Image (cartoon, rainbow, N blue to C red; front, side, top):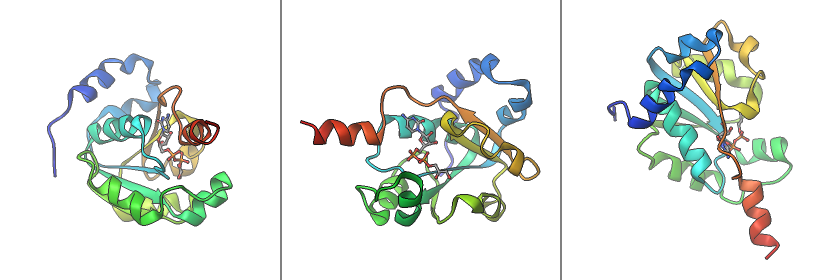
Length: 160
Ligand code: C2G
């Protein structure tokens, strides 16, 4: 479903003086925006990232990490299984398509396959993919939401 540009997008754009000149092309409206992640114990930090990414284009495609990839990335299995994580993401208004991300190294293939021209990630990934993907899409890393994470939530619950 296509949606009108949200107030969140307007706000983000109006803060664009914090975006480097090299990233200004990211502020042009894109057709397909892509992002990746595990999205385990879905929380407000994830939602804000997805909403902002969606606001930069006409559709948002999300590559959700397989359970095995999450073990490789974080050394533990996700709390929610892959089918559960896919189902929740698919129900979000800001998400148009979900596919499984099997490997961190396959970004170029995913970007080309999905026809994405903009990759948006949280700034914990800043500088990781920019040069590698520069010829296929624009890469934009946006600020993470402070003081919330899946890992911190797990710790909070398990230490009580
Ligand atoms: N995120 C955020 N604020 C938080 C937590 C997460 O903006 N407080 C963002 C992350 O920066 C990422 C997305 O939400 O862009 C998904 O986060 P994770 O589920 O932790 O996924 P991650 O391990 O970063 O996986 O190929 C790249 C990886 O698969 C990304």
